Length: 321
Ligand code: CP
Image (tube, rainbow, N blue to C red; front, side):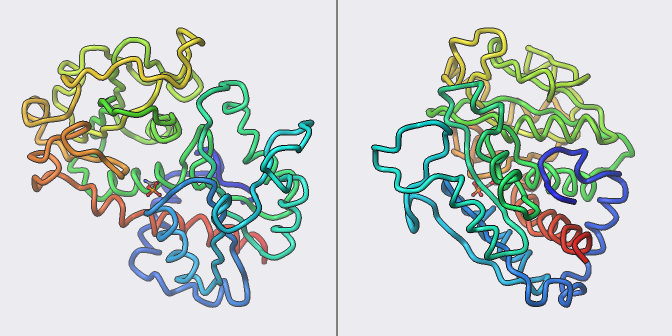
């Protein structure tokens, strides 16, 4: 595996889930694989889970993880090509990336969407430069349009908690005070479409996700109707993807608190498990009552981030042998 970006990069999902189970049962079983190998984890944006789970996964495999907080620890990096660098950015990605690549065996990159230029964001301009110029396998640790490590962990969690062969999984938009990227819902949709689940997306009008991620999923604008009989409720906020109205790209176009997942929403489900990628704003996205209930699986979901990262790193190391 040279890059981990789309669901297709992981190949057969059944095989990946079996491998995740093996890795979870025996996390130190591949300790020799990463001996004398280094992974550099580059963060252009904040993180709690991705930073820690990626380091833990690397350590489980015997690797040496190095974390670089761009804009905090290093020179400020210019990401756009063809600009006159007369501002506060001292170094261009064109030099920084091959230098980073010369110090390591694997690279992980977190770089959120700017949410002002849809074309730039959806071209995955930053991650693409890492893939092109580093010479090393690259993992998206949430890039402009996708968060595959999160979606893989979500799928592992659904596999662990499902009580029927083909559960109904509903991803619902929920309100948030600030504009958030579409990477998590894009990847969740992409991975659920590839998995053996009955997948429904619900959101207010105007929040339509990019068709390449929605695929054949059912989109239902009536949230309560969508939630009926759900086995899993996956809540997430996202800003306007600009699909129906490009001028609204990256904007908050609704703060309708009626979309917050509370006990009344969960009551129409099939005793659904509640999921969220975290961090979550309580009593905006989800009520205290729901996230604190026994049906909330947000903590085991986050714990599975180590498993998903470890499977991806393990495969990259094996492919390099
Ligand atoms: N879910 C997730 O990626 O969390 P962090 O932003 O804390 O890494």
